[in-house]
Every structure is written in C-alpha cells, then in structure tokens.
Length: 350
Ligand code: SF4
Ligand code: SF4
Image (spheres, rainbow, N blue to C red):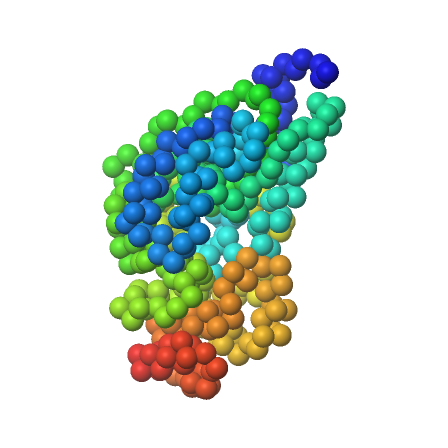
C-alpha cells in the first residue's frame, strides 16, 4: 500500500518542478464537463470549424467531458510555454518558425510525469496531451488559473501573454486544484476584432475558420477563395495579427521558453517586405527533396509543399514586384492545378 501523501505539498512541489523545467505557467484542474462546451457545440453547429472535420464527430463526444479521453484520469496539470512574443512579426507565424512543438513539449511533459512517479515511489496512470487529443485545453487552462479567454479566442496568460503553447498531463491522482482565472481582462478593448483583415472574428471569442488566414494557409487543402487572397497580404504561413495587436502581449511578453522554438536560420531575413518576397520565391523554387530538407522536424510540415507554393503565389501577388514574375511564370507549369491557378491570379494581379 502507498504511504499517505500531503496533496497540497505534493501539488506545490509538482508546480515548482514544472517551472523548473522551463514552463512559463502551470496549474491544476479537476477534470469534468468543460464550461465552454455549449459554446463549442454552437461553434461546430455554425460550421465555423471549416474543413477541420476531426473537431466534430467522435472527437466532439470526447471533448464533452474531460474525464473521457484518458481512462481513470481525474486531474490535469496544465502548462504554458512561450514561443516568442518578443520576436518580430513576419510572413511565418511565430509558433511555426522553430522545431515542431508537439514532440518538444511532450518530452518535457513526460519528464514531469517521470518526476511525479519518482517522488511518489510508484507508477501514476497518466497521459500527455499537446494540441493533439480530443481535449479543450484552453478551457482546462482557464480552470487551472493560467489565464482568461481573450476576445481573439486565445488564452491570455498574465505570465507570458498569448504567444504560448499549451500542454497538459492528465493524471489519475488527487491533486489540489488551482483557483480558476475568473476575471475578463479584455474590458472594452476590441483591437483584435478591429484588426482582423478578413472579419474572421465574427464577434468576441467567436472565430470563423472559413475566413481565418491561419486556417487558410495551414489547414485548408483547396483553393483560397479569390476575394480573400488580397486580404492575406504577405502572410505565407499562419497569422499573428490578432495576437500582435493585443496590448497584453506587449505587457506580458516573455523570452522563448525552449531552445527548440527559436526561429530557424531560413527566417532570419524574412521579416520585411523584401525578405518576405525572397522567402516566397525560395519556396516556389523548392522541389520535394528541398522541402523535406528545409522543413525536417518543423511544424510547417503540416502544410504540403503545394500548399506552401499556393500561399507563396498569393503573397507575391500581393507584395511582389516585376522581379518575382519569372518564378511565378514557372509555376504555370506546376503539376498541381491549384498552384497553377494561384500563379495565374498572382501574375494578373501584379
Ligand atoms: S489569425 Fe488572423 S485572420 Fe485569423 S482571426 Fe486572427 S487576425 Fe483574423
Ligand atoms: S486585443 Fe483587446 S480584446 Fe483582443 S484579446 Fe487582447 S485585450 Fe482582449
């Protein structure tokens, strides 16, 4: 039989360990029905998930109760890690400039699990989640006291703003829940809603992915609707606009938590218009082998090469000059009709 544990002391040591591992924020939530479940169902009902059909169906059923995804789990340790609020904005969203965050974070969450087992002297039924399982992580993070839901739909943490990755360790262990973060610190601010170029923030905390540049340039495996293309501007992969304008990201910005999230060399010169054009051209000139080498272990591999090339055509159509015409013209012979069509659009627009 295991010796009795002082759960409050254990929880404090566990959270201290999480900070020691480099996380910017940590807290504990008791698992149950998410407070945002009705809003999430409503969001799905509106079709605002666009082509991310995995968010509905069986996934939605498991998200309805946080005790369901991992059998036996009663609590979750919620963790946030900064990925670069102090980095300049650019054509690639900050979260994707370094190595793929999934494995980097999972490794640290596993280290926390290992510490817990060592500390208790016995195995603990647990499972790490990093933006992967049917888990409403932001709901749990708010409940674990990490921050509040901004009107831009992001979790805003007073410790590091909203440029943070969320990770969690679901455990079958009686830990002391943290105080939820109940205050809405957005107040009367509407900067994110006003700044969104496509109107994807239909109202405060309601994002229509069909219009969102992040969705269109990362997840969408089809043609980008023509009226939306000029609004994409120079964004090649993802969009940070509604985070960039948030005053809390200035106030709470932290250094990048883990080395793996540092921007790769290929983005070093990409932040201005010239650099954006150069990066777009580089992507258009890539073949499958170049793509595999350039993006090995990168979160940008979420998009196939043809999708990046589709995006690069849109970017050059918006911010390119005559110097970019040759590479766009080469795309008229691309094997993928969608890339050919976006190249035609870009040339015409220029
Ligand atoms: S990520 Fe960009 S397009 Fe999407 S809601 Fe925010 S500002 Fe709008
Ligand atoms: S920009 Fe303003 S309204 Fe939007 S999330 Fe930040 S504080 Fe809230």
